Length: 131
Length: 128
Image (cartoon, rainbow over all chains, first blue to last red; front, side, top):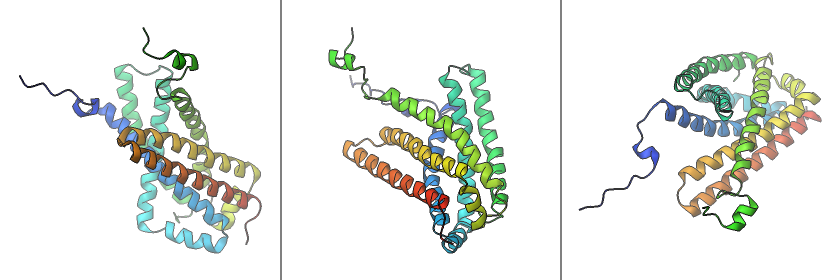
């Protein structure tokens, strides 16, 4: 009799569901925010380099692709922030009940979209539409 | 019966050597970043225009400079801890994993150093 294939790792045979969607989104947004950190450093360095260098950096940051990146970062920031807080509650053993965990998961996803839009718009307004 | 050697038990370190410390630091930096992130986003939102003068006036004050330095360092550390876990989970080959980890850590340290020096330069007077 042929030997049955051994199960490999959970992610290869688990059913796709909201829990792992939220989890992988936390990782993806975390990685994106790490790239956003490089953008923050670039911006700080531009400010430190003086008005002329700052002005040209601002021009680069105002391009249309940059705007899209900023929206992605605003969403990632809000998602990672909200879901991070959700996980802090988990760490204290709070909110593990299926109903609660599902509700907080939806709240995080919806809240991240709304808050992400707000943050993006507010920062855009604060910077005078320049970024 | 424990399968761990007496030496391992006496040093109190698990298979990951410092898993609890890593886990704990990730959360402490995370909590700090909730506050620092909110401060930074609110600061950007209330800047009233992205002119060089506005930014320098904001980030050049001692309180804002201090928070900005802490923001840069905490973000770099939090990112380092998080990216390390992601890399360790998805890069299977030992050699590649070590190489990627080193590149990411070096890059984050360099970025953090540039960020801190930039904030200090803003704090102590940017050339006009």
